[in-house]
Image (cartoon, rainbow, N blue to C red; front, side):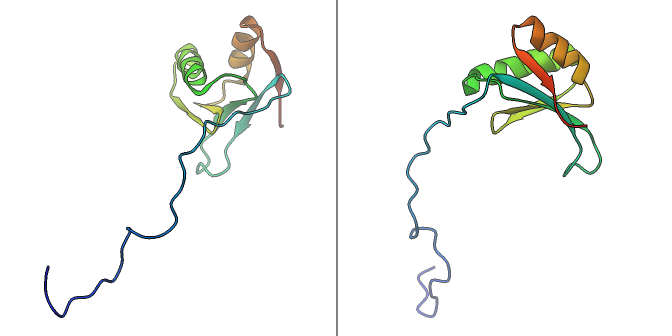
Length: 107
């Protein structure tokens, strides 16, 4: 690579240096909202659960239990639990058993 005719075209060594990201703390109003969404998922529906005031690891553990209860897959993105399929009623009952104030949001 030590060719006299070569020149630097692109380098990732320079530029903005980002500081380490701090853990995000989400402030909630105490109401867990469950909604069904299809936007941006090519028509496939998911049930989203937002407003749960738990740290990231607690949220992932809760998501795992809810996915097992629904017998389906899902994920946690930006503090929102996404469960594949329409499981609003089942998730509402399960979260109310756990002591959360739950509201079905959206249409």
